[in-house]
Image (cartoon, rainbow, N blue to C red; front, top):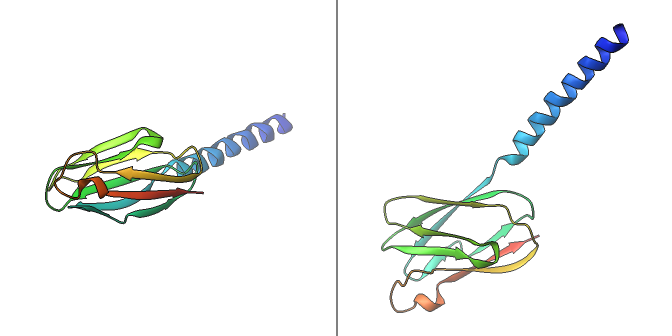
Length: 117
């Protein structure tokens, strides 16, 4: 009887501890990205494979977009309204993100780099 109680208690503690660890790991890393004609700041971002991330996107001047085609995520960026874009990098490497809403002369050069390790 005592042995059964100990096993039940141990299983309950393991479940509680495991659940707490899962919740802690699921919390995304927040990265603030500012967009203005024709640059993202920061324009080079280091990420870890498997670590959830949320970009908080703001525009300082006009409507823009952020597109990370290799991870199939994108968001509009509207002046005065922080936008959020979340994903979990599932592969390592160097990837480009771009503005995908025409923002004037220089738009074609508005890009940045994600480095996922």
